[in-house]
Image: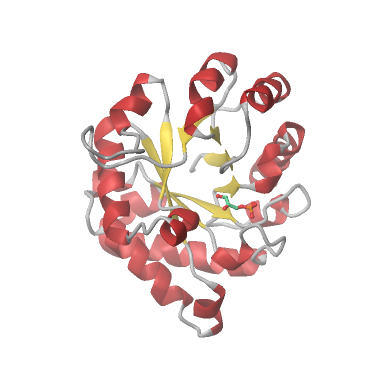
Length: 254
Ligand code: 13P
């Protein structure tokens, strides 16, 4: 049985005051088969590491460079994140692909670096509305997934979390239906099965992301191939995300 994995992606939100307050309110349920993470801006990681001490929660960055150091102005590397005690990193979020020209190639390089550095990667994939309307969503997601898993060993594949985030559902309030999300998550698992084998496919944690909230998380999490959620806007409320975590866990484990 795979772990349930709920992560809150703060995106470019939050200041020191917000992070301090969040950390005093946020306390997810503690279960052996549940992972919870906060993916915060770089500037808040050190503070959160301290203030979340003892909280059953992993600390994630939202991006990193694939080189360890060098002339890459404005970038942050895996060793820098490790030094802060960060546990993992989101890679290839659609906003990074769209606004910062990230490609399947850089996503692969970053994922390899994260794995080699002992950082847990959450790798995001997903289609635009145009691609879905044109019936090209499976093709698009297959390309993204195949590029990633084709470039790493089956052993490493087991350590990756994939987040399926249809771009048309991000920040729009319009989530994919449980059936749509399940269809794609099952497809992603089947592509990983083809490339990395049964063991990796069975172990692969797949999150759904895109307008996840308290009112829809249970029905999404009840789906067979959805193992967790990557939550944006709703994750900015510490009480709200705790409710999402609790009701997702209950929906999954009954
Ligand atoms: P929303 O939950 O705000 O739609 O954002 C989803 C997302 O992009 C998480 O990474």
